[in-house]
Image 1 (tube, rainbow, N blue to C red):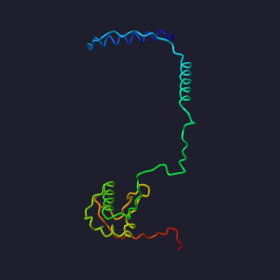
Image 2 (cartoon, helix red, strand yellow):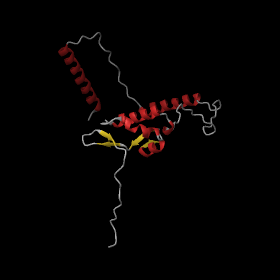
Image 3 (cartoon, helix red, strand yellow):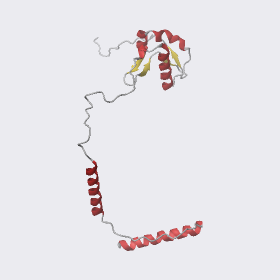
Image 4 (cartoon, one colour):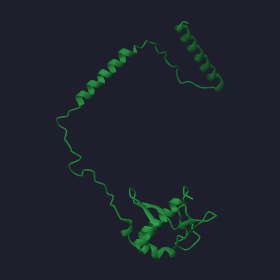
Length: 173
């Protein structure tokens, strides 16, 4: 297959298509586009020249003598504004805000009054029994006194009446 003939036919077809579109859609050209000369590209040589010039540019711009050496393990260089708070040491209002935030995240709709849990929120020993905290994000991970009802809403159940018993499958008779 002759590549030059193929390219010429391809260009002619494109030009015919362009002229057809100009007539069909009534385009008005400001001026004719100049015809560019085609030249063969020697890709290996051009890429080699490009990479060589890039290497020279970066070699000129890098100077390690003037840079400051920092030991990141020596001092605490990375300072964050995060203050690690213990959930159980927070005041009552903040604890309730965190519980409401958990309810929003989990899309919990309650059927009962939230005042039932006021005693639990004030007593840290009981609170540790019912609420687990995620250590990395310092947010509530699970609240065990929210129980889902059949209709999809939630209710507050404070007493765990479900006592689990171990079933022994392999017993001697």
